[in-house]
Length: 411
Image 1: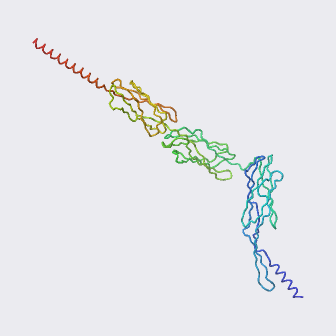
Image 2 (image 1 turned 30 degrees about the vertical axis):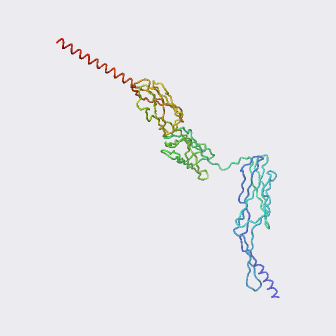
Image 3 (image 1 turned 90 degrees about the vertical axis):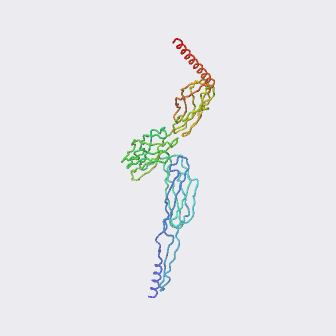
């Protein structure tokens, strides 16, 4: 009788020796839900993406059991316990219509493994917040039901946040080489105050750089508040023309203590100025005589920062010929000749006005320069003048001799 009782006791102890050694059981959770777009319009279609994750860090289960009565040994056995997903479905509950995507999914999830399932849904013709239900069925385990919020054209108030906007009242125009002063306003268009506000003016190699104060610090900018300041920018002469942007870094702290940093920009409209000057003056031939045709050549330099376009010039010399000329465009740092073809129909010294007209990014301009031209008498004129001088000289000599003889005769 005693031996029979001991045998039953040994069987009970062996059965009690079969235990689960691994305590890390698999568990499938919904880790993330994303609706795109976040707010659907009535009748629109969107995507609902759901990420399922196995939270277990191990994928095996170890069991130990006694080998038999009186043996004193145990046997261990490890088996995989990965969850098996047999079905995933999204129920629109009569509001949203599920029209595409993965409605039935089957597969294993290893430890820390995730899978993202996407459904194509259609919003109803009316607005509201809807909760289609996600159903996940696991093999040899319970299921999972998860409501997914979908917003159809319904405003939802979130955490109030500041929103800083940079505005400037003017962008120019300014000329390269000049200093641009820009009135700038920092507006808090958000729904909460911004604290520890920092505005820093930078440079990006476009030929513009800040002068003087490069940053603005504000302890607080309340919602709806506006802070105005001035930014001085120096434009290099080689900055070129067109719209140039200067980066502005804006940093502030939100209501929940988050530090927000962003980059905005200031725009500056640069327009080049043309500046024409007379660089040289010559004639061909070099010595102009009366009666000869000649070319009057005026070379003009553009010493400005922009193109001088539609350049034309005229001279008011009282000589026949071409007294107007058209040049075209003279670029900055370049020069071009202005040629007038004239006829020296008279000799003398002439003072005349050289008038040049041109157009640049700022409008139409003109410049006037007073010049001088010498026209020598012709060869025949020189001979006639010399002959007259000789005759006059001979007359004077004859008169002097006659006067001398007369005085001698009276003496």
